Image: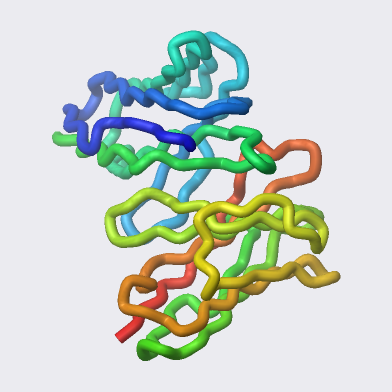
Length: 111
Length: 113
């Protein structure tokens, strides 16, 4: 089967940098995505990595190492509005293409 | 606003009942995905449709079924409801040729009493 592990909670200070790690185990791996979800809201797409390396989109960057089955989301210049849950998700071909989500990391940004 | 719509927004029903959740994907998107999110949990993949056909199945219970209609809207049917089925149900869609970014609807909050 598939499994993803990410920390349940992370706390950081406004203006700081925070890294949310994700390790995964799956066959038929295609790529790793990150989604943000505010309380009561819908998940919104942040990034997708299919190849090893760092992808940067504004204040957010995402990294993937396929050989280590590991990725991370890096949030820079943290703002209060970044307080949310962050989910990593693997896209894998296991009896059809599926996107399997981790349990999520709740990020608290403090003033 | 992602462009994906879901109705109803809230649904309260009793155990043993049957409900239907509706989803309309973004204009032009052929793929629809259904997810269940229980309180403070991650998203559990239920099922995916592409242009009316089932493409992938996740941990969907036999009491649950779904379909995608010719106009591409999708319905998720939940029957013999149990207390544990109380959750947020999200629908998402992806554009053809780019399945990596899913656009989520606002969700339907189901409460089973």
